View 1 (tube, rainbow, N blue to C red):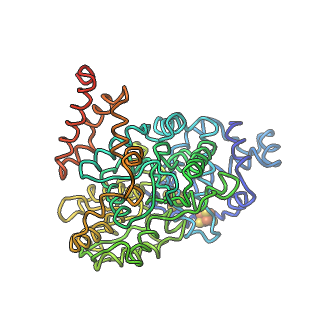
View 2 (view 1 turned 60 degrees about the horizontal axis):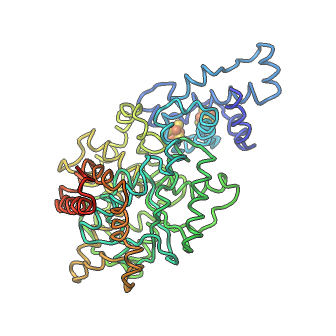
Length: 505
Ligand code: SF4
Ligand code: SF4
């Protein structure tokens, strides 16, 4: 209990105290929260979370509470109460929609983050196996899903090389450092290579890093582990220093957007040292400047506003400007922008398996929103939203064709770019990034994905990597449209066996 209370004492600001004490218990916040609206379960009402936290604050952090508690005049929450209520703080995406409905403008999401941090600081959140794995993986591997750099580079390299594409790795002096959140390079690296093709085609000066392979999304928003979150941000800055880049390229992740636009300053105790360029604003500029040719698609597409990017970071207009440049058939869902319903996937909604049934149930609101648009596709500038939306589309049979219906926004841009390049006979522009063009052989070997793979092949654990790739479900998914990926894997295996015939038996 003491560790929990100490964490609250450390992290609570005067504004948080006002947030806790200003509540009139009018319950209007519940009318905005999908978890409560659909279930009617009082324990999922926002005020159940804030009420419990208020009890702890008043009992342990106020003079009246300490005296009253000692005299048995005020309730004294115990560790058993903490354990019983823990689940409710993760049955919430900290989406902030409830704040819009609150007459006092109380930030319930902020209370939820304070509670999560206290659960983590007290060690209680680690009784949840998923949260424990996020913390341990981030601590040991700097990747919240526990992938190694070899796995991340090996798989992306496999996809890119099977299409004859390249990506710049570890290039000092590139303008932008591109770091992908773990959810992106773990769950959708096969979709993600479209973004690499866009950057290559537009001649953007960027590099990826073989050392920083996660952004810290899950440690900041699911575990709310401030020390590790800080370490991830420092790693990012140090890598940017080492490579001498000018800015960080923020890929489509709502939580990372919020971290870098807001939470990072609190976590670091100072602003993040590098300018942040969102990939959506970059793509918008590239199209406007004529550096990225596009032909508007006829895809009938609706937009899901990620809570963390639109409601909590104010990027709603940007997404619409971009979408209107790449499709003639954009249909708004209702409600939208800051009033949009959450996808229910972020900040643990989707990552914690115990939430699955409930998440699917409450996502009926999202399903109804999408269905009402009559769109063939729903897009979102967030990887996790897209994963959650696809799950919702499948659960509620929304896809008109039965095929994947949820697209990351860069995939819609890609759908507009590819035919434009084809028409100009310029598809080759996607192949080689600016930083690898007109370089000598030595530089290419040191900084291309092909060179990285060649280095991996010399490592003693390459056979284990090969085995992992051969069994990987995402490689299987990619192979449906790219059967040549297994030919490449076979050639890698043959190469490994030529070095050591015993290695892959
Ligand atoms: S932050 Fe979102 S999920 Fe959490 S209580 Fe508020 S509306 Fe519900
Ligand atoms: S709407 Fe605001 S004031 Fe009313 S119960 Fe919810 S948090 Fe309290």
